[in-house]
Amino acid sequence: MIAAMSKPRPPYLQRHVTRHGTVFWYVRIGRGDRVRIRGKYGLPEFMAAYHAAVAGSPNALAGAQKASKGTLAWLADRYRETSAWASLSAATRRQRENILKHVLAASGDVSAGDIARKDIVAGVDRRRDRPAAARHFLETIRGLFQWALDAELVTVDPTQGIKAPRKSRDGHHTWTDDEIAAYEARWPLGTRERLAFDLLLYTGLRRGDVVTLGKQHVRNGVAMLRTEKTGEPVAIPILPPLAASIAAGPCGDLAFIAGDRGKPRVKESFGTWFGEACKAAGVPGRAHGLRKAGATRAANAGATEHELMALYGWSEPRTAAIYTRKANRQRLAAQASAKITAAQNANVYALTSESDALTDTQGVENKGIKNAKQ
Image (tube, rainbow, N blue to C red; front, side, top):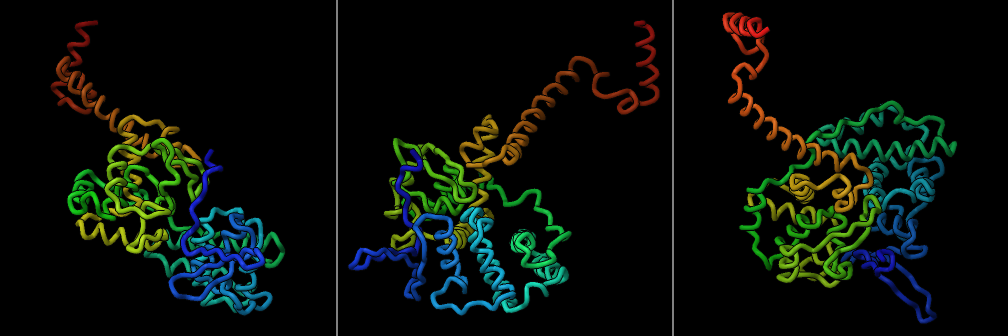
C-alpha cells in the first residue's frame, strides 16, 4: 500500500517535456542556474545527483570542468558512480555531499595518493568543538578511501586507525513538559510555528521526513510513509491534537509545513527556521529534541521496544531500548522506594546490613537478639 502511494516531488526539482515528448529533469533554486539531472526519476543514481545539485556540489553543475585523473576530486567522482555510494540512504548521501563540497573546494586538485593520515587527523581536530561534525567528516572520508582501496585506486587508506570522537551520551536536548508548555503559549494554533511543533511532537518524524509529510500521505486518519534515513515504513495515527493543528493551518499543498509562499521547505532551512521559533519562545529545545520527548512520553506510558520501532522507524531495537530502559528504571526505582518504606515500618533492622547502618553497640545488641532466637 505504501509503495503505491504517490510521492510528492522533492523541492526545487522541475520537470520539462519537449514538443517531441522527451522528459528532462533539472534543479533550480530561486532564480539561479538550472542544473540538469540525468537518469530515471526515482532511482538511487538520479536522487544522488539531485541531492548533489541541491547541496551545490561543483560536480553537479552543468558544464563543470572535469577533474584531472588521480586527484581527490576525480576519486570522489568515481565514488559517486558506484553501488557503494548508491546503497547509502538519500539522507546520508546528501550529508556527505555537503562535506565533500567543502573538502574538494580546498583540496580537490591534490593527488589522492598524497592524502596522508596527518591530513585526516587535522580535519578531525579542526572540528573538535563539534564532535558530531568531526565524526561525520571522518565517516565520509573513510567511506571514500575504503572503497578506493578495494577498487585498487589507492594503496593506502589514510583514515585507518583514526578513532571518531565519541558521541555525546545525552545527545540532543529532550524537551521538558515546561518547555513544551512555554512554546505552545508563545505560538498558538493557526501559526506555522505551532503546526511545525505539533507535527514534530505527535508524529516523531525527523526533520527530513516531517518537511515532506502532506495530506497525500494520510489515509483514514493514519499517515504512512518510508523514512528518509532508514527506509523503514511507518504508520502514524493522526492524534486529535495534531488533527486540530492541521485543521487550523496554515498548510502547504504538497506538504503540511511550507514557507511563506506555500512551497515545501528543505530540512536544513527548516531546522534554522524552527530554531529561531524556539528562541522566540525562550526554550533551548530544537526539532530532534521533540522526537526524543515523544519517545520518552511513549516509553513512560508503557510502550515496548517494538512499538517504538514501528512508530519511529528504527530498524534496530537498541535505539528504542534507550527509552524503555530509562522508563523501566524509573518504575523499578519507584517500586524499590515503596519497598524501603514498607521494610522500615516492619522491622527497623531491615534498613541495611549491620556493618553499614548500625553502631558497634547496636550491632552487639542485634547479634544478641539473633543468638537468643537460635
